[in-house]
Image (cartoon, rainbow, N blue to C red; front, top):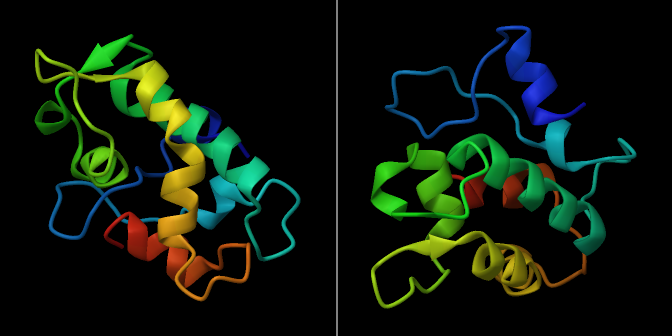
Length: 120
């Protein structure tokens, strides 16, 4: 299920605890084949979806101006000279962010690893 489609039905938002919105298990967005694990390819697709959702498809944003879950995803993406995180840099960092999130080093992400990386 796509993140935009899920939100269009008013089911909730992917957010950090303490935010004004409901928490949801982000595995339902990232695990494209519903096998209980997220591969690097699925994570890259999820990153593309997440960028679109958290930034309304802007080419660049200030990380501090997006939803806290979006901030969590952008935390390891270096900003440009003006302090913006660009879409290009964010998407290019997918592999690095995946490896950092893969705490047990098995090459896939489980729900705890993925939700933990988002602050859930």
